[in-house]
Image (cartoon, rainbow, N blue to C red):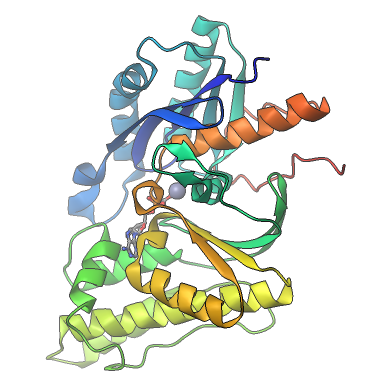
Length: 342
Ligand code: KG4
Ligand code: ZN
């Protein structure tokens, strides 16, 4: 294996079709993202069947734009967790390309991608993460807290029991008649609202590292049902504050318990300004540094998938460890530790 090997990453787990070329583990040469938002907008959420069809329609041209005439040494794709139809399209595309180019193929975990994305700055891999750390993955499909000892060495502390944080934003936006995706719309409305106008619950589930957001969403729906007149900005601001308080409190409790000095936050909801500001401020109080993913790379993209593959391959090269290829798709994939005890 050459030290400056190039990896073509593919991402198709939810509603973005993306392909990215990562060179030498340092440079994102291309990162082409086709977002299906327009297709799902009128349903206020991702419709799996439409998502599969859109992936199938777009993946060939997205890959062609990402590869151009560059040489490729590996193909990597997100093999789970995600929607089955999208995963299937990604696998077929990845395997076809790998066979055609006669290069090896590697499946990677989408959620590892969201965490590793915190290592990227623009088009460069900066290696900003310091271990051990506590990672919060907050997206439309997932909300999880991980203790991360190193790349490939994780302990999942807890995940959501019901809705993901992004899903709660999307559902509240739908209740209020705001457009999909709901997160940015709710945040925009919240700017002119009062954060203490309405008290929505903060489900902290003491004694666990789990989350539960369906209660906040239900509290919003009851509030709307019981009030003939209400202020959309006040509802948004109060809901956003309840979400952020819950995420910040639980993440900092986990960081304290695990005695780490670093936190990483990735996934679509990591773009939220209030979350970024309040997590940062609360962490500084505890002497903890927070690493947020760049806003442009917070949503699903293939650069983060190629980066996970790079870390795995570089590790295997350094240690001689044999990696499992993980090309069988798994919609409910749990992360596995690929770094052996050294
Ligand atoms: O990571 P992502 O692109 O897709 C998944 O893997 O799920 O996350 C999309 C989610 C959506 O639910 C969207 O509403 C939410 O991220 N989101 C936000 C913001 N921007 C996107 N939530 C809160 N505040 C934002 N600024
Ligand atoms: Zn995602």
